[in-house]
Image (cartoon, rainbow, N blue to C red; front, side, top):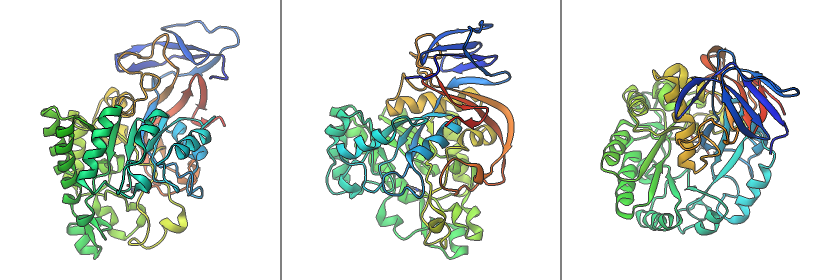
Length: 434
Ligand code: DOR
C-alpha cells in the first residue's frame, strides 16, 4: 500500500479509456478519491504539478526481460522496474527465459518475492514447456493458481504443433492466454538478421519472413480449433499482420503486440555490422515497418510491447553473428510511439496501457479499463506525461544495468514526468524517487 497518505495531481488533462477531461486527481491511501477541476489541496497533501501534461493510467508492458534470476549482470528486478517507472510503466510482465526459467511454482514465487517493494508491479509470464525446451508442458495449472495469466516460451517458439494444441486445450480450461514467439526453427536456424537484400550484401545468414509467418498461420488454426487464446508476441512482418487481421475478422481469439524497434528501424540499420541492431525477430525492410504502423493505426495490433532485452556489454559488443539479440525498450517506448506514429495520444495510450492491461489480466488495477477509468475508487496507478517535451536519449543516464539501446543520441518528443504506483509517486519530474 501507499506510503504517501494524500496526493493531488494538479493542472493536467486526464486521458483514459472513457475520454479526456481537464481535471485534478486526489488520491488517498493509494486510491483515487476525487477527479474534478480546481480541487482544493488539503493541508499536508503532496502536490504533483501536471500543468500542460496528460494524466493517464500507468503504462503496462507485456514483454519485459528482467533477467533475474541468472543474468543479474544485465538487469535485476530492481533496476528493470526502476527503468519501467521512469518510462511511465506501473506494471510489467516478466518473461520466463531466466536461468533457471520460470516454469515452476517455486521459480514464480521467487520472482514475486524479488518484486516486493519494486517500483512497478511485476506479473510473471510462465513458461509453456518445462525448461522452455518444447518437449513437455510446464505445470500450468499450478502456475495459474499463483496468478499467472500469460504463458510463453519467449526466446523460442513452441515448435511442435501437437504440443501447442495440447497447451491451448489446457489454457482454455484455465482461462489463461498463450503468448507465442513465432519462429519456425527449421527456417530460421543460423540466421542473424532478416533474409533479404541487406543480408546478401552483408554476407550474414538470414531469417526469412516465412519463419515467423508459418507459425502465426499454424497458431491461428490451433486457436480456431481449440478456442484457446493466443497472443502473438512482437510481430514484425506484413504477412503476419495480414494473417492476424483476417483471423480477427473471422472471430478467432487472437491478439497481437508489436515492438517499437519494428516501427522505427529497418534491416538496413545493420549495414555497419553494429550488434546493437541485432534483435529477434529481426529488423525488417520498410514495407514491413509500414505494415506494423498500419496495424497500430487500424487496431490489428492490440499493444505496443517493449521486448526490453538488456545484455551486458561484454556480450553485446561481440561481432554481429555472435552477439545475443535484443535491445532496451522501457525508457524509450512511449516517446518513440509519440514521435514516430501519426496517432492521437489517446490511441497511443490505449496501445501502451489499457489494452495490454486487459491482455495481461492486470485490469482493473492497471490500465484504467473501461469499467475502471481514472475515477473515484480506482487504484492510483498513474503516469503524468508531457507530450510536447523533447529530450535526447543518453544511455549512460538509463536506470537499466545495460546500455544496449539503438536510439542513443536521438532526440524524441514526449516525456514521462511523474509515475504514481498505488498512490506513491515513484518518479517525480523524471527522477526516480528510490
Ligand atoms: O531479441 C530478443 N531478445 N528476442 C527474444 O525473443 C529474446 C530476447 C532476449 O531474451 O534477449
